Image (cartoon, rainbow, N blue to C red; front, side, top):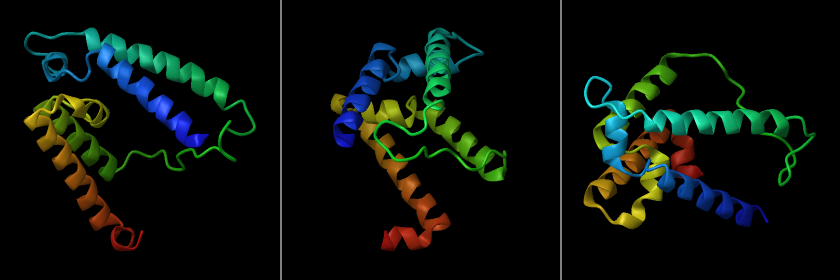
Length: 142
């Protein structure tokens, strides 16, 4: 049941990204170009997503347990540290340079764009390098 729920959620998320045109690098770069020909439409998409998620989170966390899990898995840390800031900067640079962030990049793989395959490959390499540096035992041993 968990796999089916994950598949449905992933498909719904991908469809939302496509409808909002977040899989279109030109649209994303237009949103990020605040000093030039700025396109604010993705800001409305993000505000809508935040509104829905904030409401849903409030209602979901009123439950004793999740529907398909035995307990909630919430972040334990909330401080802003150097790693978080560096990660945010790298994420933003990748988003601005490539015109993709991870979710839309994966949702766009069906387009079969060479630039997209390069971006996803670099994203996966970066994830592996991060895991190799900060969690070396998990890279080789699970």
